[in-house]
Amino acid sequence: MEMIARVTIRGAKSWVGTMDGKQLDTGTVFTDVELRGEDSKGICTQAVKCENSAVVKSIINNPFPFLAEVTMIETSNGKDKGDVKIITGIKPLQRLEEKKAS
Image (cartoon, rainbow, N blue to C red; front, side):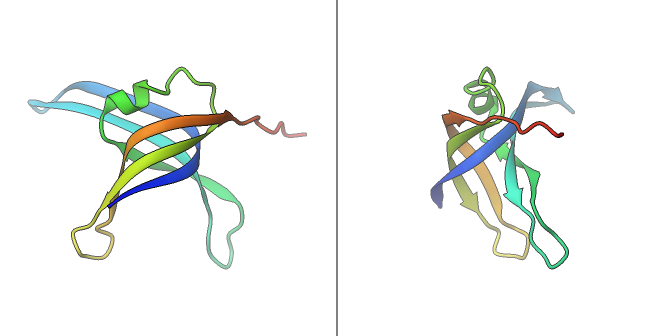
């Protein structure tokens, strides 16, 4: 299933190379997600895989953090915890200012 979401992106990384004889081309972005639960409050950062390093390279020169519209696909193997989200595109929307701790 393809979907579009609006997220805050805090960071990103990519890697292209060979590991154990396999050619790899990977990317990951780190997005804000709300904490849930009776004893939780606020947000944390979650790693979300990208289709390849080109997705990350398209936004790596933007000032972080920023609000973005991401296109992603979600797949499942039909079992618990078998859901996988993979970002296929990122469209930066707005730079976000960091709040300074006082």
